[in-house]
Length: 88
Image (tube, rainbow, N blue to C red; front, side, top):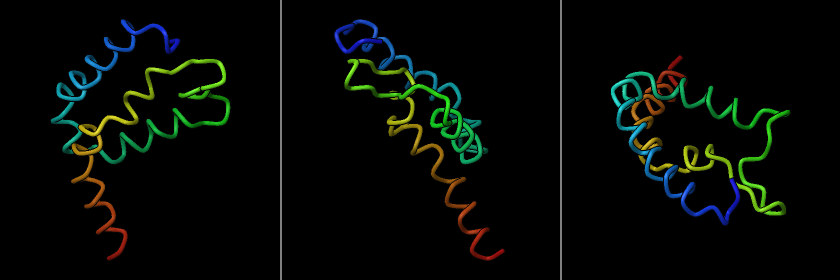
């Protein structure tokens, strides 16, 4: 999407939190592995950039990656994974 396409950006900003809320039970139980896989997919080598300032483009993935609700819902399993790694 282009930066100038305000309507599309607004729709994405509204739909991402709704999708995260729908998926919240799954994220609370298995959020860390899901989030790690998603971030690997978004930042893989052959992927396009999620924020390309030179071309004036922003990907819908940017709204997902920067969503604080997603980070908050994945926090319990991430902290549990870190605790297990330390004791393991």
